[in-house]
Length: 203
Image 1 (cartoon, one colour):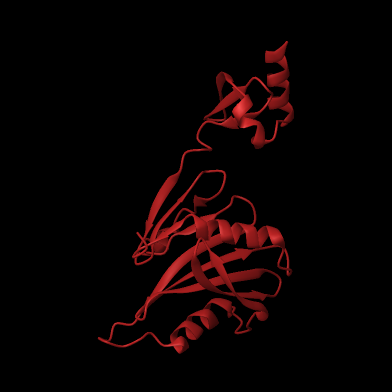
Image 2 (cartoon, rainbow, N blue to C red):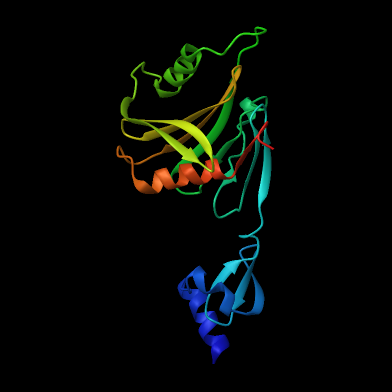
């Protein structure tokens, strides 16, 4: 009877919340849509690879790791095979990417104007119109300080900027489509991306 309840939960898309993980035992594994589903005795289920991190090296930024149900990499367009900045998706309506800006002149500090020019390019559409500033504030994620800026039109872009050294900054950008409002869900996904990002020089 318990096995039928587990299978019914799987078919109906039901399950038990994760906090009870310590009380459950695995009862079966079965294939579904080219993936393996793990069934537990309390009705909870998950894909076998949901708790396995995939990791990607991001040039001049560091390493980003996430489970498939958090973020996956967006396949590169054939015309952009030389692109060194990968783009990630939550497989819903949010895209993310991380990039770095570096001052190449010896013994010089990367000026804030360079950061401003980069952000301006990222919020300017093909029609030349810029997104409007929605908010700006300082945040701390896992002990690292970031400058946070949000811009919006018919979609929202959230930026976090941090200095790795006087010569180099890292900028993380997430875009959420289908809304002109900055929802808590977008902020949480953005923060989750930052927490999964291991920056060069932080090791």
